Length: 235
Image 1 (cartoon, helix red, strand yellow):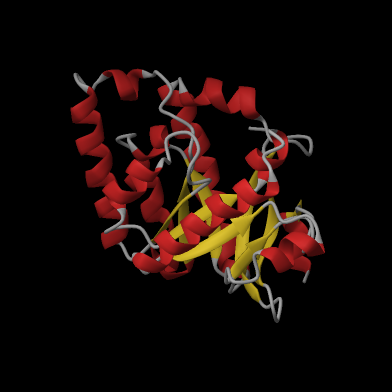
Image 2 (cartoon, helix red, strand yellow; image 1 turned 90 degrees about the horizontal axis):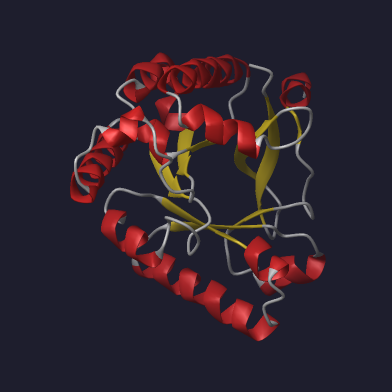
């Protein structure tokens, strides 16, 4: 399909110990946003993508022992074929984290089969419960943005294991530092209240790393750049 996976490390602040990796989709070194949207709207292409995706994850799981996080869209979760492809990596469920991305559902045949929004939400909940029952960790990516609002967090908190908060929106919109800190600390408090792991991503400087050292897991350019997956295998 012309895609490849890069990886970025997730580390602890103090010891900078490895807490796993996140797989990042790339085409010619960049995230293929527009192409991915087209794929999500076409059932056949989406199935082809998931076949490739889980085949790549299976290969990687066989040659490394680290925990692997992979982004999954709402369209993928709601696809009738999702669990068929997921089943291909059944032996590695205990080392897998599915990060549900914040992007909304794109209109497609998979989505149009739901007659109401409530039907869609009920089906999504059942999918999340099924993933949880498989023993796979579930993370909500970029909480506070897109679909992954605080309402979504509270709706699914019983079945999710991890929240990810990113500094990128604050940086893009020039949010004052004090306001950024208040929002991030709100997520720290919420994660603690519900006994969820918290990951902060988008860390680019030592100042940001120190500012949020109370968060157990960090990710960002300050710690490592995304690298082609082949380099992980070589290590």
